[in-house]
Image (cartoon, rainbow, N blue to C red):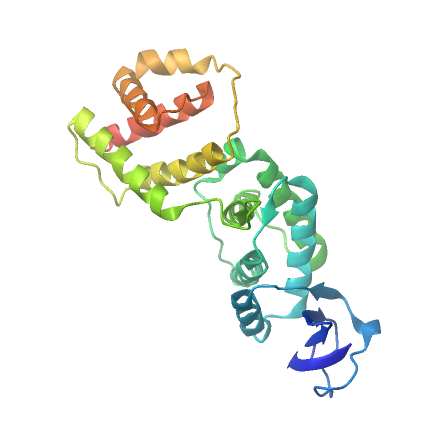
Length: 274
C-alpha cells in the first residue's frame, strides 16, 4: 500500500480502496515519503480506526509514546475480545495505551497508582478483572515490569468504560446515571437525616459502586445465588438495610443478595461518616 502520511519513524498512514490503516513497525516511516510503497515486511501491528476523532487522538499519541506500548495495548485488547462478550470502543486503544505508558513511567520512578476500588471491580466484573491479570503478565514479559495485582482493576476499568452495544453506542448513559446517583444520595440523606461528606472516601466508593451497578443493570444480567452474609448484615445494620430497600423500590428492579449486601454496606459507611 502507498503511504498517505508519515506519523513518525515507526508508524505510517496507508490507504487502499477508500480505507485508511495505521501500520506500526520499526523503521516503517524512516526516510520514507507520502506516495511511496510501505514495506509490508516491517509491519508489527495494523490499526483500523474508523472514527475521525479516534484517528486524530491516536495520531497525537503516537508522536509521544514508543511503539512497544501500542503493541502491548493491542495484545491486551485481543485477549479482551476473546474473553469478553461485548464490543469495545476504538477509544480504548488511545486511553489504555496512554494509561500503560504513564503507569510504567511512574513505576520506574518508584511511584504507584493505588486502586482503592479493586475489590469491587473484582467482585462485579470478574471477567474484566481476569483480563487485567493477564495484562499484568504481558507487561511483565514484554516490559520487564512487575506490577501489583490491584492494577488489574485499573485495566479492567478501561475495558468496562469502553463497552459499546450492538448499535455502536457506549453502554453508559452518563446523564441518566448522574440523575440516578443524585436521587439515590437524596434518598439516603432524607431517610437517615444525615449530611453526607462528598469529599470522603466512603462517598467516592459509593458513587463508583453505583456506576458499575448501573452498567450491570443495562446488561440485564440476573444473579440469583443467595448470600448467607446478607442475613447478618440485615440484623446488624437494619437502618442501612431499610434504606437499601427504598433504593431498590426507586430503581424498580429486584436486586440480588450480593447487590443488596454491598449496597447496604456502602450506605452504612456513609451513615458512620456523618
